[in-house]
Structure formats: C-alpha cells, structure tokens
Image 1 (cartoon, one colour):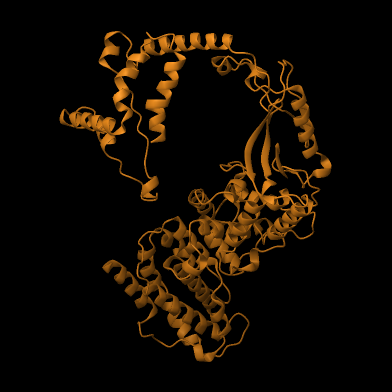
Image 2 (image 1 turned 90 degrees about the horizontal axis):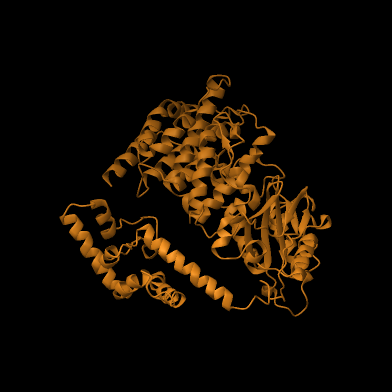
Length: 585
C-alpha cells in the first residue's frame, strides 16, 4: 500500500511542484485522468473488468490470467506470498495529441522540461556549505587520497570517473557526486591506515583469498588483545583454535577495553571486505554492522547448529576439523567430489569467499539453497565415505574436509528446523542406518566366508543412490537382497567364534539392529515415495552415523541375540509391510 501511495500521490505531487512552470507538459493530462486511481479499489475493479473483457474477446489470454490469478508458492508464508504486477497507464486524450505514454515523444518532452526545471533550481539555490559528513566544505578538484593496504595493493577512498555518463543526469560530476572536505579526507585515510596496520593483523584485519581483506573492528578504539577475524576464519595465534574459544576471547577483549560506565550496546562492530578487482580498482564486496550482543547470540546459534549431528566416524577428524568457522563454508560449498573420493574441480566456485559471513548473520533464508548445493557435492561420494568409515579404504589428509562438511550439513538442517532429536527418529535417517547395517553384515560375511575379499560394492551402498531417488520402492528390493545374508547371520551368531573382526556375536548384533530399524520404519506414519533435500541430507547422515550407544553396550550379550523371527515377521517381510502401509496411505 505504501508503494501504491507513492505512485499515485507522493510522486505526482512532487512532479507537479517541480514542473509548475511547465503546465503544458503532457504528464499533467495523465495526472488529471489518474486521480481517480488514488483509491486502489477503483484500479483493481478497472483491471478486473479489463481482464474479463480480454478473456471474452480471446485476446492476450495469458496476460488476462496473470492479472486475475496468482497461483502462490507453497514454501512461503501466505502473508508474504505475493508478486508485483506492472501496469502502464495511458489515455485517449494523450494519444490524440500525439503524446501516448509509451511513445518516445512523451518521454523526450518530459525529460526536456525536467532538465529545464533543474537548471532553474540549481541557479537559484546557494552552493553547498558542508560536505557529506557535515564538515565545512569548499570545492576540491584533486582526487581522493590513496592508501597502501596489506598484501600489495592500493585502494583509493572513493573514485568516480567523469566519463561515467550517469553523473551528468544529476549535474554532479566526480568529486561533486559525494563532496568530502580535505580535513575529512585525511581523517578517513588515517583511520584506514590505522585499522590495516601490520601490527593489527588478525586483530582488526585478516587476509582472505588473494585480493580480499576482511576488516572487523568496534566503532570505538579499545585496546584489543584478540580479533574478530579469528572468530570468522580461525587463527593459529592461540594454539589449538576453536570457534567457541575464539568468540569468547574476542568478546572478553572487547569488554575489557571499553570505558567504565559506558553502554556496551553502543560499541557497534563494523565488518567489511575489500577485493582488488584490477591494478587500479578496489571494491567493497561485503559490509555488515553488528553489536557484541548480536555477535554473541549468533555465535551460540552457530556452534549449537554445527553440532546438530549424531555421533559420526572419527576417521575424518583431525585437530583442525572439530570446528567450522564461518569463512570456511564457501570452500565446502565450492568443493564438488567424484565417486572415488577426489575433487572434481577447483576452478568452478559459485559461492563467494565471504558467503559464510552472510550465512552466519542469516536467519535461515539461505539454508535451502546452500543445502541443495552441499548435497550435490557430497551425495556422489557417499558410498566411498562409507568404505572409509568401514576402514576398507584409506583416508588421505586432504579428505579431512569431510568432517567440516558434516558440521555444515548439521548447521543447514538446523536452519531448516530439523533437529537431530527429531530427524534421528524419522524414515530418511532410519533408512540410512538400515543401509549401513546391511553393509556391516555384508562385510562380516566377506571376512568369514571370503577371507576378507570384499566386492567393489557392498549391499547397502549399492542401493544408496536408488534409495535417495525412490526410497520406498528400493526398500522392498533391499529386503529381498538381504535374505541370504540374514539367513547366514542367524546361523553364524551361535558359532562362538572370537577371531578379531570375525566374532560371532557381531552377527547377532547386526541382526538385532537390522530388525529394530526395519520395525521402526514399518511403524512410521508416513513413508514418502520421494525425498526433499532435507530428507536426503538426513539419509546421508544416517548412512554414515554410528549406531546408537545402547546397542554398542549390549552388543556382546548373548541375551540380546536375535531369534529366527519377530512378531512382525522376517526382516524382508517387515520391509514389505512398510511398503504396503505407505501405499494404503
């Protein structure tokens, strides 16, 4: 409604005042004939009538339907689900005098009178007496000062080349577009030199990718002992680095440095990133203004969300992979993996290096798109990750990145409202666990019966990609495929073998896990025939997650060995029951 009032009331009033010495301009005809539309209901009725007439006459039917109906977006809140419709207003009177609003004549006449009026206004008003910052100002033609920044590039405070024709529209060229007094220029130059000094590296600034520098500092100038840069990208300056520790050090340093009795909320924190475009140009590509309170809150949310995961194999862990720092997110989103566990390409980088900062301060609007991108990178390598977790293949140091990818996956699920306490009880996650226990049973079989000769694909892994696309259909096929291994395990669990990694109790443990998971799936109220991104992520996590701790603790107990059948039938029958129940829904 505000935009509508601007269009039909405020803008016409301003133009009438500005063009009052040119009353014969054709736009005044348009003003008179559109006054009735200041009431939005009148315009709606007119448009509706016009649309129905177009439908009756079968003229431009798509446009008529677009005016009458909006089909909506199921993912949006109904109160915020709408789109804009642009309407060009014209009149018969304007057409008769040769000034239709869609004609070049109308536009040219309006521009001519606007320029004439602007020239008169400029000649009548006094010259500016203050600059953009309120400092006494006298016209200065010399260019803005340049500053030598770290890592070998030079930035000018501000540039506006006179050949950029857009300036001439407003009658202000180069320095006049944003007047800054000489004294203010020196203050700005000194401030940027101070904040980018080498001794303040990792305190007020930090180097990112080539040509990018992150600046993060409070508005006042406390004596900081720890910087915000370490919170966003980690630091080696304090021994073993952790996100939580870096955040606490910065906030503690900030509060220690503030003047006694001052309000900490007034000490706002400025964040911006400079990128070197070429030899002569530097650009601010990201900027954000925050407070210590918001930073602390966002940090707690980030840390908690990153741990929105069950226990995962520690094979991918290292000293530097236990925490995810915001500025590491872009690298994970830009890393596409092949099925053999190697990077597909390092050249294609759809996400900017500072994307993690946007994600850190985002309330969830970016999560769906980021999750989709992360899954595209990780799903091809899911089966290979499983083999790493089973210790069938060796992990290289470069693959420690997977641990951070898991943390980002947990964070994005949290942003979409999917917490581990909930999703670990749902079909997609349970299905992933079912595929995992199928693999484990197959591995035990190969160790015992094939002397450790493992096939290229394990049973669960061979169904992974199909399960992600057609989960319910694949569930039945998995049950059929597992029949011989289940029969073997039922017999082997009583052999009392104690050879390392061939223990017979493992067969009973895997049988019990398989039976429990299949029963839990059969009890689900809804088994979807297709997974959305969040559910695919849950299945991915389930396939790699450790089995529940309670099952591990009881894994060696003879009392827990599985019987030939359960009340629900054999394992593959339970899978069939799950499919039939879902079909009934």
